[in-house]
Image 1 (cartoon, rainbow, N blue to C red):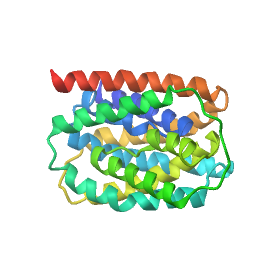
Image 2 (image 1 turned 30 degrees about the vertical axis):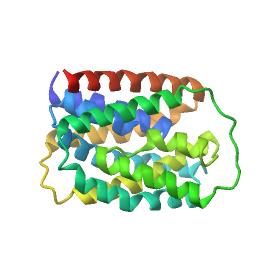
Image 3 (image 1 turned 180 degrees about the vertical axis):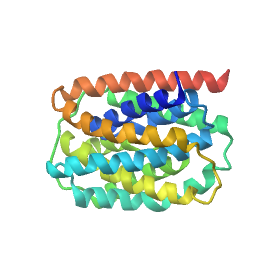
Length: 247
């Protein structure tokens, strides 16, 4: 396959994940950029932030129109992660690529296992500012260091820690991803990382279109089915990257 076709296919899959699940775009984008398009881990994480930022904004608009974004909670959660994301983003360029790959695989595996846990009862209780701040700071650090928007971790945190209903957690996650990704991308702007825009541009375009379709398709599937399917994909990606880094 040509680079263009690979970029379009991978971008569409990333967009479907973000639009349907409110996360997972970076977890799929980074390995796709590395193993399909030949990016280095540093290039892939930076390109992923750019792709996910634009795609998340697109998906966020659709979920906001449906009233599925908890703006106050999302902004508090995201604000707590801005500084950690920027600090971790400046450090990322000095971390060995093999370490970034292993760390990414471990985070993806942990997130997948969490998503496979039995569903917990959803609540619409009041969000505690301390919980939102702590969860947001941790997510911001992961975003800056590993180049992931954090949605695949944000959704479980918004449901399990902050007690948002699943549908609102998905929409709110997109707000968190957008803010964290912008902060981490800003921190990497001066690192001099070269990106192949001939691959990044079509990847991003396909992801944006895929996000709209992902939102529509999510309404046709049961949430548990979509979540479990995505978790298994995450486990497969994590296993592949871990083996590749170790061998």
